[in-house]
Image (cartoon, rainbow, N blue to C red):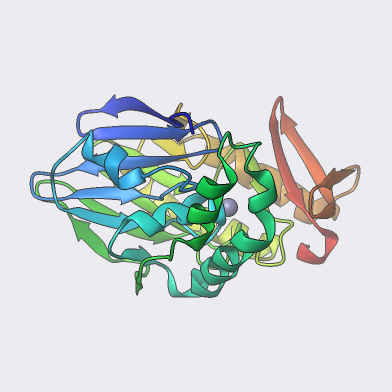
Length: 264
Ligand SMILES: [Zn+2]
């Protein structure tokens, strides 16, 4: 299998790892430990990739339980995740054997390589909750819950870099149409609660893009969610995605909110 990971230094001590364009994760280094924020698809040895960046002891944190953010947990000793996403994590690991073997060619892997990937076991999970602080030595990450995309989605605030690592909780095409997604009013409450942290970050770094997004994007997202709630989704188009049909609210080019009417 060809190498998937590409490394992008973003700021002193911060590297983004792009997993072949499928999703991204981050390595944030302090003086004593390094955090690995999400573990992407796990099609190649992410631990070895991280070791190209740092030799520090590692703390692995999942922003939420979806496969493209947790499957690489297999290469680590343990990972932190919000308790409300543990069942989702387990469900997505269980999906591997039903969905992935037939996709070997698509990933440029042999069937043997894909079988080894399927057979790899997830690492033990440890709970992490809102308000906890992960001390990396001279820099810390603060856990902020953003219920919306999933019930247990978290973001991590890095005041040193001025970054909020938001996973899929805030990104360019927010998915709120999933069974595990919260109501739109709950998501709006989560976004409003971020106001207290806004002085401490200037950029969002999401779960699917190497480039950062200005923090003001949160205001655009709040306005879009408010409008959907107020209008009951009037004018929003039907949109077919691989899991069914959702409503799609257009924000601007390449930027949408996906939801289902039961989330209103
Ligand atoms: Zn997700």
